[in-house]
Image 1 (cartoon, rainbow, N blue to C red):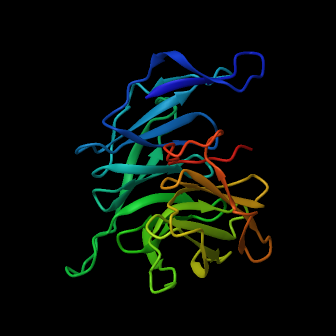
Image 2 (image 1 turned 90 degrees about the horizontal axis):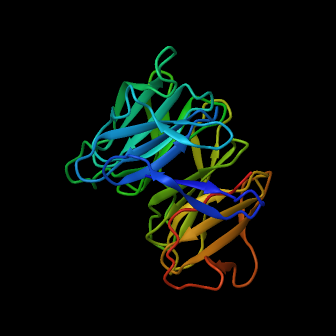
Image 3 (image 1 turned 120 degrees about the vertical axis):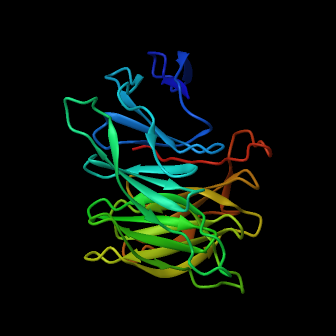
Length: 294
């Protein structure tokens, strides 16, 4: 895994490669920082990998140190995505190949500060042989409720997970649009915890869900078509909660939406509603991930 510096002391905003390359596993894919800012977790999804590496986050220089006591925490097959709970006490890992979730608890001192141990697994395997195969992709955790949400583009749904007691609460599918069922892949949570959005990479659709403030359960609200040539593989919301941005890997553009603060409804911005993913435009850039700074 590459370690990078941002800035050169003159507020340039440039990114520089550090002198070292940090050890990671096979095909490091997912990365998450705990809200306390002490740990970074990296999934390794390549081959038959089943490991999650954890790193201690340094002080003002932002350096990373591989946690020596338990750097390779066993998860399920091909762990893809990872997220930390708001209180930094637990980490949830999506096992794409294992069709399951692994829940980790961060161990207390005097162990290394980022050491985690598995405390349970949830199987997401389809029980009906004729049904499509479960392929869990990405995960978000609610900011104030013990609920997590996992996209599953194989089954075309969002799985709802209760973190208290580690239980499967159900799943919600976006209603069909133009005879095509959106298959949720990318996912993002509104800062308020009231709305959730998913992107379908197969048909350029972003789906909106409302979240029950008591139970955390989802209700599908609407589908917004970005365009037939779009593949929103990653979504981000700015810190104010006013805008959604979608990185589209097929046409190398960014789609932009405003968010209605009351209903969560999305509205495309501008004509033709997109910006090139790089400037000047590079049709081969194929943006795969996007993040909004605070």
